[in-house]
Image (cartoon, rainbow, N blue to C red):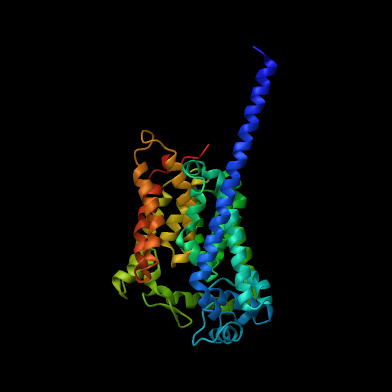
Length: 412
């Protein structure tokens, strides 16, 4: 044997592998950029008239940022003030689109209010696309099996309709997705304090992150819970400092108006049949019955208790908590469902890499994940029946929590 020749062959093999990996990574990067551009084109093609008319959800957040900057911070929950500034800054409407976020989030939109509405909208759209790109990159190590099937597949999954809807509406749901993806990456590295803080930054959609916090508390993930609680207190203090106590009380009182099937916030009707969760399903099926809230509360409590009995390890806990949280959330519109892409992508990759002999429930879990992925494609053309999305969400939440120790194995 010639040691020198063997070393040369090993070096050549290593170099070829590096080059192959580099070409493969470049193809994945190109596919991610292509998907983002396609989503942007879809958003503009479908929603450009609404953008021009200011009929997008971004109008209330943009206006709240302006009101804080202009010294009207204590009026951001006042219906008359919201209507005045939205009509002045965006477009004239008979009713305002209410700002139903904790006051601290208005600070995030303050810089956008320095621009006219349309320019601010497109700047926020560009920011959302950049955030989606970073989410894809963070999840890249968790999608080796999907990438082996087709290097475009992980990126193509981000064409999930709720993500496109969030882009079109100028919604903040993608910001929450980024916080959850970042938290998942931190949990993979056993950085629980950072993960808890990141999830808490998503308290602008507290109906989705509070159930996650409660599950981590039930699972005795003390470091995560302590960081979440600390950030929660800080954000609550900032919100009180911005608007004061009385406006915050009125804010929470207005949110309670969403409790019935024909609930409203500041005169703006909440369409419960657009909600793909338990609340939306019960509200639509029972059509204004007084049993809606009791049944929703009972079913939500049962779901949380059953999931709490599971003790998932590491980052798997977040994969289980997200669908459970979405299912029991107070309200869940189509764009809010974009956070489900995280457990869908990761679980599909893991299940694709499991052989039939290793896990007999593999087919059921793959079916539930695929059904949850394709349901919004169908229901987006029948928005009045979007509450039906609660059924695949329920199935996915059940099967993903059923056997976390097997179905949610960590990828090597």
